[in-house]
Image (cartoon, rainbow, N blue to C red; front, side):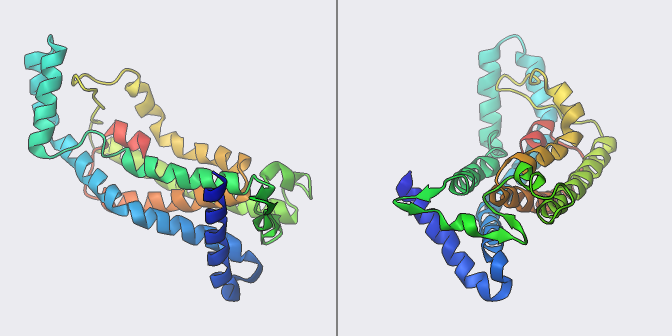
Length: 256
């Protein structure tokens, strides 16, 4: 783990050095934003595949309903029939999970990097970098202790909260429009039956984006920058990839 952290710290430091002539003291923060964009760009082909898979699963709902009618009393046969249908249509039921899962290591690396006072045998020099007056290794409660919410550090977090709230509102309105456009396609398990509890999740789904505010408030500022950048990218990406999909697949949308 220490070798990986050292290599990751070197990568962030190298990006910061490249960006320093433009961003000066905020070069490490800019490096994190650039790193996040590169991660999202790397998984974009999977996001496109997930979008195609979600649209295909929506189109398959009438066939799945017919299979459920025919094999509803035989779960094993139902599962085999579903697997055959997905294989014939070249649709993976798990495709929507991959983009989110592949981003998690990058987030946790940033979290641990900017939560560690030392890297290898030396001090973590990245902790000395700032975004304006806010240190990248500190959290919102640290900013509140140095000037309050309207202090120099607190204003940095207020700016991030404003971005997250704007993106969450965009997602909320977009999801509500999609849900109003037609009945939501229920997520189904391997036996073709609706997933238990997904109905309640569907009702809460438009509000889930606002939960990002809590994440930004409790993680180090560097990790918060990753979350804000990734969340903004995700909102724009989904708006483009799903612009011709009026009906939401509740399960996939909740995982994105």
